[in-house]
Image (cartoon, rainbow, N blue to C red):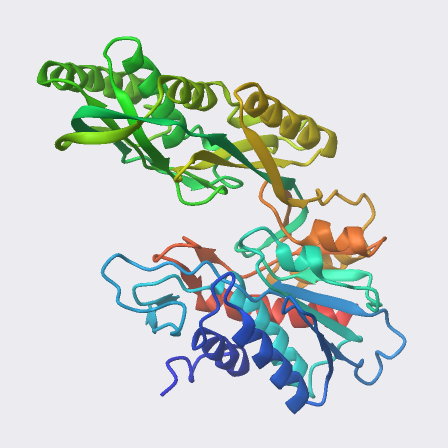
Length: 482
């Protein structure tokens, strides 16, 4: 039995529940891509599906709109698929279990994928209907947005006629997003050499921090667990002898890391006792430094037994510590045109120890391409000086603000008439696919909207039912005006 069968608008929630019944985490979207093709076939709509799995579905204009310009509706089919520690669901093969709590729709024990399943549900409800007036529609649904916008980067839009794009990948009702930062990911890799050493293995653990999205929370002054770990290791190295076995921290380059850890070896009990005292000092100093922006940091020293271990050489350890303590991190500049908007930033999101390498993954963002390029070069130079190599991936251009936007004007007027107030028009530091698509379609006029969601990409994710209803009404009104 469908959980959402009585929810309005019925066809939107019908399709959203179908989407949730299929696994569709990033990198696992073939099933939902083929399902979209099946939908187009059943409704006798023209479509194309590329080798990546991107899908474009076209629908002719309704009566009276034949001479209107084509409009593109756009979203992505992948979700950030995460689950609670005790959840037994296999997100690679199973769908989600939905539940309603008040006005919120959730998934039991997992993320919901409202980002961006609701965009697909809106689009399919519109495509199947014969009583919704609209211009010619081109519905573009991409893969793997959450892991680097790979689908948008690889899609071929040569045959697309639309030059107005309504992106449905925002999470705050009443906000029209009209510009966003560009970005690039940089992986730094340092070769490791090891020597055998005897002693007691200890783990230094940094935890308890808030973390957050590196586009949305980078300006809130939160601590980066990976950077803190580097600073702690540097302080300890100047006071007591130890050898490093491994370091790790963070989950994704676009998430501010809330935890990090280092496994080390010390020779005797007195060194371990001394480290506990120094960590207490460091914990107090860090708490004072971030008292206005962070949770109290937790620093732990965990004992893991004596033995013979393969430790990094002193030279490799020194280079890793220098990398962690000399890299730029966080906000680098603020916009001079838009008050309160971060212009350029970077986030050391993941550090890891592989068999023969230490690696660091950084996410860089800027709304100014020249600043993004300069920051990327700085990261690469620091890595090179320390003997490492870098690889860029997932680059996407900034989506620049348009002074003149017919689409934006229509959407402002529509919102005012429907809801009796002006929408907020803003730029964001997080990334959207609009910049990539605009680069492929010169002259593309873009605006991004969406219903209210909270705690996206987490097991607490919620989608407001009433906001979903209002936003769908808003989308239909916009289409009727274009």
